Each structure stands twice: as C-alpha cells, then as structure tokens.
Length: 257
Image (cartoon, rainbow, N blue to C red; front, side, top):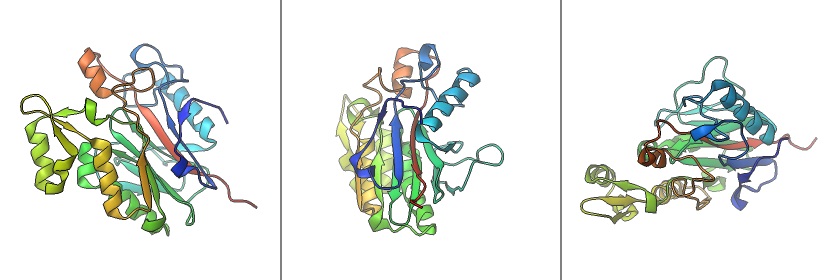
C-alpha cells in the first residue's frame, strides 16, 4: 500500500472493509490540478492522471473501478475492471474482494456504502441531479442484488459543497419542491431570490428514507477548503478554465482464511 492523506469515517471502520475520501494532496499534477487529480475527463496531462489513479489504487491495495459519470441514477454491479471503456453511470457496487469502487467529485456528493455482513460495498456520485433522481437508491438496490439488507447498510457522504457555499436560483428550488414539498427544508434564504442549498443534508435524507441503518456526512466543504479539495464552483468564481476531481473509494479486503 502507498499512504496518502485521506479522510475516513468511523461508520465505515468495519472488519473486512477499507475506505478513503482522498484529498487533492499527494499526487503529481501541476497548476490548477495540483496535485492528486484523478479525473480522466479533465484537461490535465493524462499521464499525470494515470499516475494519480495508480497511487490511489495502491493506497487502497486493489484495482480501481469508476464509471463514466453523467449525473444519472444508473448503478452498476462490478466484479473486476471494465473490459473496455467505462460505461455511463454514477455508482459501482461489488461483492468481490480487491475491487475498489470509486466515485469522482469536485463539489458533488460522493457516497460510500457498505453491508459488512453480506460483504457488499459501493460508491456513488450524487450531484444535485443524481441525488434528485435517485442515485443513492439505485446503488442500494444494486447492493441488495448481492444479498445486502438496507437495515445493515451504512453510508457516508464524503467532502462536498456545503450549504454555506451552494447558492442557487429560484428555478432550482422549484424543481426540488415540485418533487417533494419536504425538500424545502434543505434551502435557506440568500440574497434576493437566491437560496442556499444543503446538498449533504438532502442526500442524507434520501439515504435515511431509503432505509439504511446509519449514515453521516464527514462535514467538509470542498468549495471552502482550497488547500484540501478541488471545487467546480470555486474554479468558476476564480475564472479558471478547468478543475481537478477528487476520489472517494471503498473495497472489500480478502476474508480470513
């Protein structure tokens, strides 16, 4: 294993499971991508991205598998690396030891999930669109196909944009409230007709209503902590042409012989 600076959760400190919310530190990328940019879809040097992904996989001790993320509610069951390019979707789930399920984000909410009894884990990418349309629920359903039970699943939302950084317009608010009037509690008034959206709170609510046994947010705002995290919104406000992507990852270790 290669040690990198990571954030972890006590909820996922479970026998036979390894997880990490990686920061932007410990990689080889330069400039606005400094330094652990794992986003192949960014405009960073592909050789640097490949090395960063290799380092993250080495830290985990397995083979990294991520989807081609498109802000969908599509989840995949995997038992090894893709045979060709990754398919379009936003969650990967496995019951196979050594397969590292990964989700990329740069303000969106990464979710790591585990059922330690059934030995099933998964990683999901929940931007506002994926959260609204059910990516968390889709990942849970994929886990159930491997024998997981909702009441045993623990889920942790990793570093993402916090409510104090996430200003949205009235049309955004209207879309959520049209889906469920209860969603209004995840918005607070901002300037004029603007509102501040609590993405991690909303995702946690979706997980709770889906029936997971326990869930939490790690409490880190990607937009507010430039030294530790990449942020799409911060890059936009700074006029930067692109931004790096962070990795959140989980895997099963080999069971005792």
